[in-house]
Image 1 (cartoon, rainbow, N blue to C red):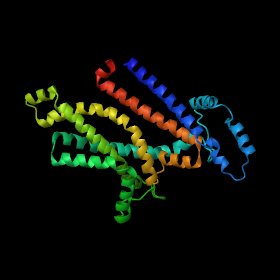
Image 2 (spheres, rainbow, N blue to C red):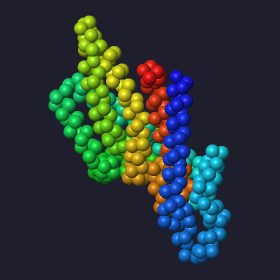
Image 3 (cartoon, helix red, strand yellow):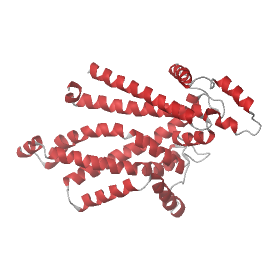
Image 4 (cartoon, rainbow, N blue to C red):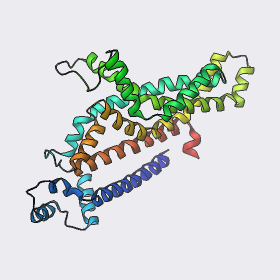
Length: 316
């Protein structure tokens, strides 16, 4: 087990370094570079831009800039925002809870509903429910997230008036119920595509387990179908879903970016778009690295959990 963990940790660190190099290089090669926002000032001369570049160390070779930035990153200095001069980690921290709240609720919702749909579809193959779930999943996967968001706002906010159209809470009302009221629509919209993905994978995994010999043996012993399903099928079918949960994290983060924009949700996705518009490069790089760390940790945690519950993985 220790060798397995060290191997996964080493691979994660190498991947993180590669992501940082690519992200840093691409951002600095964009026309205008980190000085793009300063160049928009009509009173800014070329001499002023050169002076700012020297002060920020941008006149040095790109590899030297990267090593300096990476060294500060390791010490906890992620730079300061161009917009208000606040530390990048502090800026990200202001929006972190909003994103985790949205992602956590939508992930829990998609796993619960997707698992139930997948298991029921597998145990009732070729039924009306199975065909309906398949068609619904194809539709959910074919339509972009922002469209679901706009339709949800139109129906449930404008026409019915049941749910708020945006924001995280009503100004002046910070109660938990008010937060929940604002959370319902964006979390449901964000979970729709993930429900489709999870249900399809869960259906395939359940069908694969149902056809195994140990399930047939359990039935031959006289166990009820419900006991066979709960004791022998579901647990084994969920094993590959643990890995899927880690792999879905990038998609959830990407969906959160779109969802947060549609619903003006003050999370990291909204911050990323605002920072792009302002050319706030330190915050953009900070968000890129923070998201990469989350994705890598999610996949690493999924590998560890799978190894704990399945000795074949860690001993193979």
